[in-house]
Image 1 (cartoon, rainbow, N blue to C red):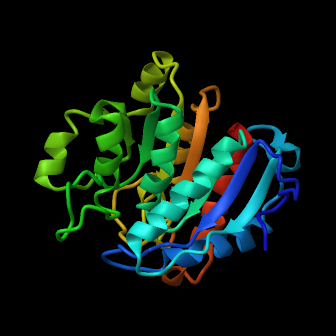
Image 2 (image 1 turned 30 degrees about the vertical axis):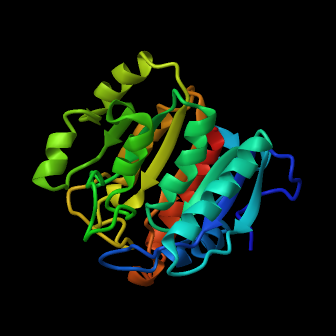
Length: 271
């Protein structure tokens, strides 16, 4: 099954792909099942966005299916993700990944950074993800933004919605750009012209409206609050995007899947 209204043409502006990887999930695994569940629920949506006044069938995008990843082999999986993202960039397309856990961002961002060394990464997330290691592991969903910062520097990481982290991580956020309001974000975007990569960890949403995630954290955004931020990015040079950490086993109601698929629809419409 492909995401609604995707086309078969391989020469598309946007290439969406699934990344069924959750090998480092530390609390509730299951995000490897998210890509197919999100695709299924996309068919419950209308293709037209009344907010953006655009139709998804006018977007030049293809769904490339899911990557075939070796479960349990983190390093090899990250290399496969990186190579596929490079293939997309080499074909002058924008990669849009459906995770999977948050570590997939590092795999994609490595090749994004190679092509766009002045890129900034905009992180929507409940958690800082700035640990240097987690239980002795350098590659983890809890260290992903630290690994990205090893490439681009902490000052090029823009964090939105963060409300959880260790004492050390909160200290490190003094070096990132920690956005505290929509007005802060508007003012920040006025002053940047560089490419941006967007990563949306769905636990940025409050678990009362999005329970299907591996590490739920109270105090998050509503759907509308999140989208108010995402819509502000419409006129920026977005060079890649991922949406991660939806874990279908923890929300059999389908509310989380429906929400995730609508976020993707709206994101595709601003690329």
